[in-house]
Length: 262
Ligand SMILES: Nc1ncnc2c1ncn2[C@@H]1O[C@H](COP(=O)(O)OP(=O)(O)OP(=O)(O)O)[C@@H](O)[C@H]1O
Image (tube, rainbow, N blue to C red):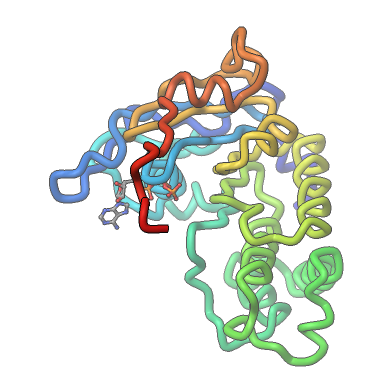
């Protein structure tokens, strides 16, 4: 597979979330979320803690069954046809569920073969990913994934998402715990990926990062999408995304009396 086979007509919807909803007991975590992600775009999903970002993304990629609504990737329903849908997806979930008693490159080999990739392609891509993501040294010293730091786990998770070069990447907080040098590398990788026709959805709390990286943004709060569109559309007349975010989500300050014992 190469970038051409995996790219889609620019602007064509590649990820379509329609009316996704999820309740945990009596808590409405996600309430009728609909989002359309066009090919070649980089979309940032932002929202306060507990807003429903992870729940929405988990339903979008077939990791959590919605109570209602549908998710389609490249036209394939994620729940009706999960095997086909997952071929089009690279996913960095919140918290990795990976075999951990392997080195990074062993994990990538296992992952690639499981996805039906040929051995030579898996080997060369795994080697390159390990080098670019600066995990090579850990690999050479035989470090197992279970011994990785939080940031290293994030990077190996990204490598598994990228390995089969899917057309759509869904990454839950990919920059969290990643050092600044690796963050730059990651930005380069994601930019190259979208320049080649790929589409990316990331969740993040860092408005400046989303503003710098993404061309589209969705703001979610209490399980509801409050705004979505191009960065300019969502920012509207505000100077920056953070101002839009606070005006929609509501800012709150700590009252002077709180934590007086500190
Ligand atoms: N497995 C679960 N069981 C019960 N409640 C859950 C579960 N997962 C999430 N929730 C609840 O669903 C709501 C949305 O959580 P979610 O993790 O999607 O938010 P988030 O926007 O990703 O938050 P954060 O930015 O803090 O990671 C929260 O109220 C959370 O407590």
